[in-house]
Image 1 (cartoon, helix red, strand yellow):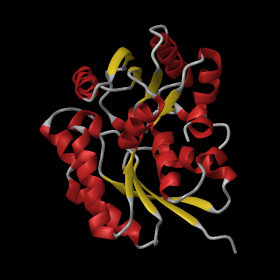
Image 2: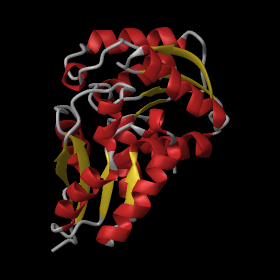
Image 3: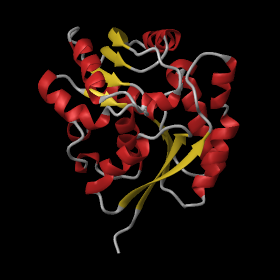
Length: 242
């Protein structure tokens, strides 16, 4: 029997996108499967109530339950460190591993690694978020040496509503951002259905598009020693970023 590859994904409770998309990405890897643990996230904002959803204690409790499945890696399939600060994800990964003994990764830290590996300095940003959340993300990236040269956002707060954004709306935002000719574009939200559109958009625009559901899958596979290029049909991230 081929050794199984068990990927754990920490999931916002109101997210309906990342689970089916993640499982579809792994279709071509019969030995790999994704397993999901939820914790409460219902809104994205900078209020104290919204920020408190990302308290490590809730996330760690979900991670501990996931660890009972003897996973090879645990990923935080969310973008909260975009506005909380990247160090929040660094601390979270360390604490998950300390609590469970399992390597950990996140969507945002993986994206940042991809930017560095591919020489991205000027990027385009597509999100569903509020104005002040978008501004915080752009500021945090600027502090790390990445310039956002174009952005689009939908001024939404309810996390469930992100999953109801249409494919055409996502296409429109990505294409408008592409007009600034960034080095890469990121669809920065794990409850937008951007990942299934990436290959189509890259072919028409000639610009890499990195979706944050895809980035954590890419990193999780790497941490297990699995070649991400075996994931086909989901864009240049998997076929070109070694």
